[in-house]
Length: 263
Image (tube, rainbow, N blue to C red; front, side, top):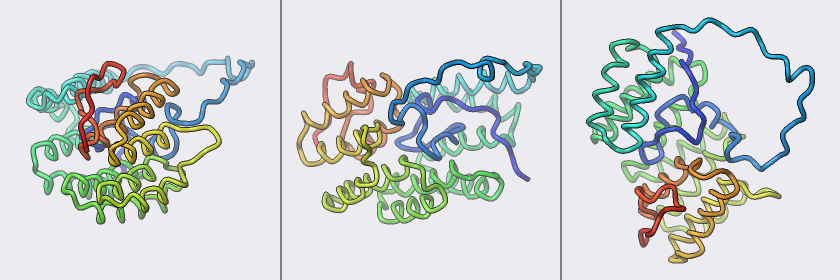
């Protein structure tokens, strides 16, 4: 049975565990607005200005949205005991919802129960019409296990089906950095280069700089990404660097950060 995602959060607002995607992250299949090259907003026309007729609110869906928002806040603050309590409410309301099950997998992964998390993701891959999120998370589990070569191969397979995803390219770059192979990392960064910088390219370059001991340069690239693409909108990328020990997780947003971990 195919389970449609219940709702979508803006990509920059996704709670993450290291680099795991926990909630509806399908915009991340390609280059989501917060990390794309900046383009002027289109002028309003009679077509774009015409609003569709509103649809009646589904009380169950709205209740689930509210519960998952509370889960997101608790998880994002790393209060996992509270997050688990809130998630129990969602599981009582909609136990088969794929977002709820994905959130449970995130709790399992955070508690070290990688096998249980992997089992959920494998099931969702079979059920979802568009399995980007569970496939991404399966690859990310290898990163949590420090099996970077396996994670890289999984991300490469994912990229074959989602060739527009610079997020996946970014993770491949990080896999080489984790293995202390700067030459391979630079080669993997080439497809991220654009005429106008993207947050993916800036964060990949920052990761390489930090890993090479170029702390000031790395920090400046992270701050540039925040300035260009919106402060507080790149937590997924930042936490992926934190997973490798390149930055301090609690220092996000970086504008308020005072310290960066030494590689």
